[in-house]
Amino acid sequence: MNAHLFGLSRIETFRQLIPAIGVLKSGGVVSDLQLSAVFGSPFEGRANDAMVLQLVDYFCLLGIEGVTLRDSSGAASPAETAALCRRIVQLYPHLTVTLHLNDATGLAAQIRRAAADEGIVRFGLTGRELALPGNMNMDLHIGTSLRYIAEVESYGFNTGINAENLSQIMQFGSVNI
Image (tube, rainbow, N blue to C red):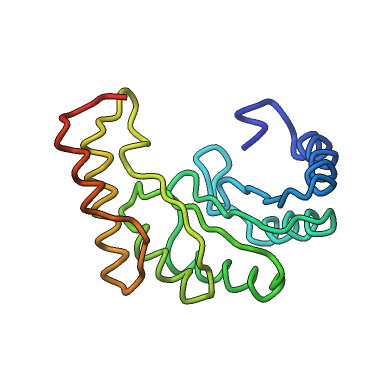
C-alpha cells in the first residue's frame, strides 16, 4: 500500500521506521505498529496472513509493544479476522493488539465480536460514510456511530460512549465537514 500511496517499497518504509522505533523507545513512548489493509485492498488484492505475521515478527524484534490491524478497505470478514487475531494473540501474547475496522460492508460489529472472542479488547472504527467522496454530513456520521454503538452494546460490550450526549450534538443541525 505504501508503494501506491507514497511511492515507497516495504524495504524503504522499514528503513525509515527502524530509527523512529529507537527514538520512541529511548523516550519511553510506547510504539505501536500500524498495519494497513491486513485483510486486503483494491490495490494489492487479498492479504497474506503469513506476510502480516512476518511483519509483526520483524517489528517485535525491534521492540514494538503493540500492533494495530487495520481493515483499511472494508475487506474483512468475521471468520478470517478471528483466525488472524487468534494467531497473533497466541504468537505474541506480550503485544497490545488493536483492531481498526472499516464499516463499509456493515459487518464491523460482527467482526468486532469475532475478534473479541479471540481476546482482542481494543477497537477503532471508520464509518461507511467516510469512504464516500465529497463532504461528510455530520448528522450522517453521528447517526452511523450511534447505530454502531447500539449494535456493539447489543452484544453485551460497553463502548464507554455516552450515546445520549452524542445524539444531542445532532440538534445543532447538519454541518458538512
